[in-house]
Image 1 (tube, rainbow, N blue to C red):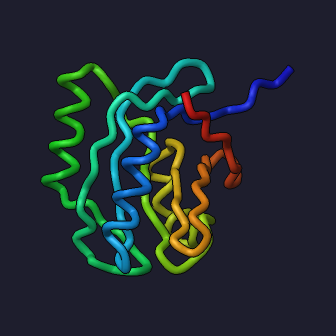
Image 2: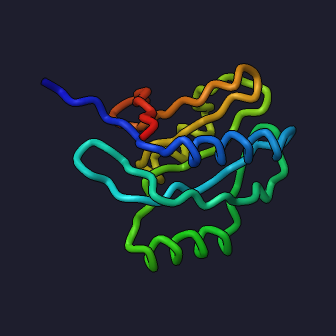
Amino acid sequence: MNKLKCIVLTQKEKDDLVAHAIEQQPSESCAMLLGKKVGDDWNVKEVFLTQNVENSQTNFTISPEELLKGYKIAEKMQLELVGVFHSHPNSDAIPSSTDKKFMQNNPVPWIIFSGVNNNLKAYLLDSSIIEIQIKID
C-alpha cells in the first residue's frame, strides 16, 4: 500500500505557527521548519519563526541573515530544513503562483495558514502540487 506523505508537528509547534500567523496580520508570516525526514514523513523538531521583510499581505521573504541563522541552528542540532511555513492573511490555504515558483527551489512541504478560515494545510511539489497530511504528534 502506498503510504501517504506527511509532515509531523507537535500541538505546541502547530499552536506557535498559528499564533505567529495571527500576530503578523495583516502581513504574511513565515517560518523555517527544521527536523528530520524519515521515509515519507517530515518530522519537525524545531520551529524557527522569521520576519517577513516585505511586510506584504501577498508575499513573503525571509532575510538572508535569518535564513543563514536558521540553517546554522539546524546544523548545530543536526537537523535539516523539512518545511516552509507561511500564512495567507486574506485568502485560502492554497499555494499561490508565487508559492509554486518558490516550491521548486525548496522541495520540502509547505504549510500554509489561512487567515480567512483558520485552515492549516500542507503541500508538496512533486510533478504537480499535492496536498499532504499534517499529523499532530
